[in-house]
Amino acid sequence: MLFEKAQQLLESHFGYSSFRNGQELAIQSVLAGENTICVMPTGGGKSICYQIPAIVLPGTTIVISPLISLMKDQVDALVQVGIPATFINSSLNYNEANQRIWEAKQGMYKLLYIAPERLDSREFIEDLKQMDIPLVAVDEAHCISQWGHDFRPSYRHIQQMVRSLPQKPNVIALTATATPRVREDICETLNIEEENSIITGFERENLTFSVIKGQDRLHFVRDYLKKNEKEAGIIYAATRKNVDQLYERLKKENINVARYHAGMGDAERISEQDRFLKDEASVMVATSAFGMGIDKSNIRYVLHFQLPKNMESYYQEAGRAGRDGLESECILLYSSQDVQVQRFLIDQSSDRSRIHAELEKLQQMVDYCHTENCLQEFILKYFGETETETCGRCGNCLDSRSSNDVTKEAQMVMSCIIRMGQRFGKTLTAQVLTGSKNKKVTEMGFDKLTTYGIMKEKGSKEVSDFIEFLISQELIAIEQGQFPTIFVSPKGKDVLLGKEQVHRRETVKVREISKDDPLFETLREVRRAIAETEKVPPFVIFSDAALKDMCARLPRTN
Ligand code: ADP
Ligand code: MG
Ligand code: ZN
Image 1 (cartoon, rainbow, N blue to C red):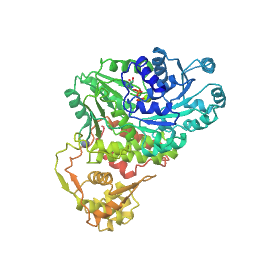
Image 2 (image 1 turned 180 degrees about the vertical axis):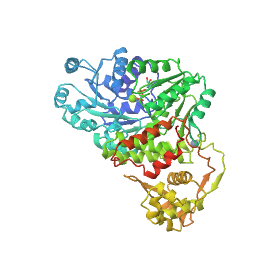
Image 3 (image 1 turned 120 degrees about the horizontal axis):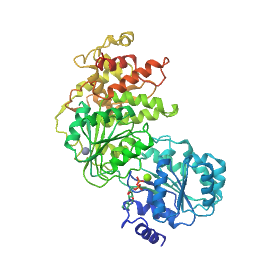
């Protein structure tokens, strides 16, 4: 009967005629008094899973959300349909916050949104104890886990807070991006039974994924935009500078483009976003700062101009295409140089203890770019779905290039790795295979190995790419660390012993990056940054040789 009320509310307050996949189960579970976890893709409709119970249950539901910029919008939307709600975060001054806390203690709100940092304050916890709290909703719950992509230490205080409240409220955790490991972590931390997990399919049947390699990205983007002139789309670039450059380029081509990144002023950012939302600009060029909470349904494509830092970010960003259910494309433009840039960014931004986990995630992102299997299936498996099928529509499923037997080449690479003692990186291995006279190669005596120079007709870049391919096929494993090292996996040993074969599609010759490529500047900056820090930070993984290799690829500036 509580649930009947929930159904009425869906219509009367939210204006929807039926629940979406998973919403019903989640609400039932919460109303049955169970701690619940709800894993649904972005845009799947997670908010209602706690908003409706909040209205039905007596008292004030606490919603913990790290997205301060979205709190106001969410609260405004609730208030507009007559649901008393408010938020407390750092955008309020002391008096405003106190006023709202006082009102919440009087029971004036059904929902109170708070930023996780509030929980660091003992005083605030004391305030909470004086409220009547039946439910705590933990939005973006992956922030609880070290294994998530956005760990927030304050999230670790949630369970303590919940336990200290006199009513012992129930908890509902919500996230779009939980891998099995993160999910376990959330359930353990928040004391959620596994059977109270509501996980809806991550498959988006109207999205077509592809990875484009070895093409001039700028050319690709120009051509693509010409072909899709009338459609709305987002292009994600890695850095603010990349966004600005791409934006200027496209504007010169008379493309109706908007831009968005955190380095712009508030007013400009909002007006650019508005132009895109109102279809005044068809293309949005942005960093990953753009898109959280954006509800634009007719986005026909999402292009990634550079490699994202992990699969979670990628799927979240790409998933902004096709919310209306119509066919849409998600295209990732890959160049192996991006990996260096991402490594550098990880090194700059992460706290030391997370670097290892971040590098592992980056590697999986690189594997996605190198796999020849179904891309949709790769994504679903990554997010823990076990019963998956090939999609038949992604770039790999539709790839008609013929496959070559590359077993012999794979054996060459792997026997070289073994001869080198399985404790060196990709670059050095490629150098040994191509017969480089690099100092490190000779110093280590690797020029005496029988595998020295056995692939000398190929470039070291080509061999490096081939090693990445073998990694994506799980024949070679990688141990992340200050200097990532590669070794042969059990599956790889079977290939070495001739028990298994390896096939690879004919590869496109990889183009070197041109001065036109916005990445050009980034690489220069990376070099500059490294040159400036006399003591190279311990986790920057560029070897001198790798850097030289990168520099050699850059065309000379006069
Ligand atoms: P999430 O938090 O999972 O990313 P939201 O809760 O923000 O998603 O919801 C995404 C969009 O779906 C919103 O515009 C919301 O109003 C809409 N929505 C949610 N539930 C329903 C429903 N049952 N029917 C139709 N639209 C819905
Ligand atoms: Mg949400
Ligand atoms: Zn596929």
